[in-house]
Length: 177
Length: 147
Image 1 (tube, rainbow over the protein chains, first blue to last red):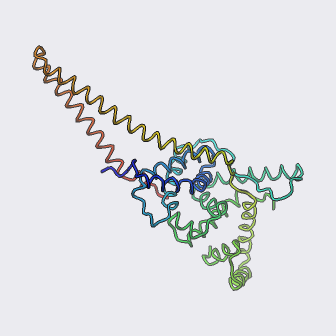
Image 2 (cartoon, one colour; image 1 turned 30 degrees about the vertical axis):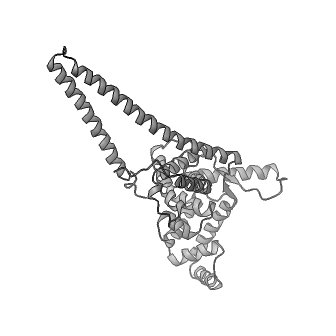
Image 3 (spheres, rainbow over the protein chains, first blue to last red; image 1 turned 180 degrees about the vertical axis):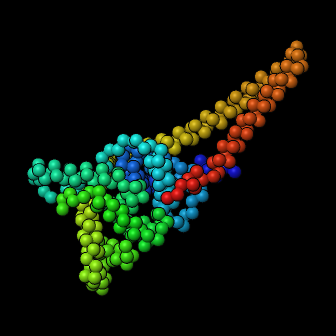
């Protein structure tokens, strides 16, 4: 029996379109954190939306759409990472400049170096470690939300985050201490 | 690593500790200075990360994102329509060609048998491949991923 359904009713299509518009930024940023590449993040997050569209008639509307969608996106990203070992990454992190624009050149260079170092070391982490840091530290998700997305207990989220940060700290070293 | 310490540390880093929990954390530091070093390391790296954000694309990018997604969905429909149309047209053409060939009295009988068997074989093969593809699609491709 074919479980995919390409032809949705008009109301389902409108519903789905709204869900895509509401969630596309979250989807893109989640993929960006995992893949480290703008182009790949766009492609895979869209591919995940298309796959979710095909199975939308099976989606339990009492549950959160993004939690359901994230499983599809995550699997796509993990498969992509596994298959494309030598993929080219682009810059995916920005330094948040909260000070006045009169930052001197030396400070700017230091900030850029720190940013590049963090990017490089983030991509050296295992995907699961990078993922949890992205979800908590960059996307500011609560422990409960992360627990729902990854289907693990809150205690495990805290524990994984602790060890992921520890690994990142060791990689970054004593820079800026 | 002590699970309780991790919970207290996480709450502290997120400014969610109660006064009692802060007292408890400080007591743990006094009992075990290594935990203080762990805490400082975590706070240091979190401090670095806090200065960063994921690169935010322009507004034009988000318009383009939506447009590209809509186009992909439309093209999925288009490909399905083309596939179904091609199957109908080619099926009709093959049916007529084979029917006319079999109806032709000048063609030797054994040749007619051969053509009929060849056509039947190709149809059965195609249906078998199609059934296999549909059966594979029913299974979750990603179930075997251990994450």
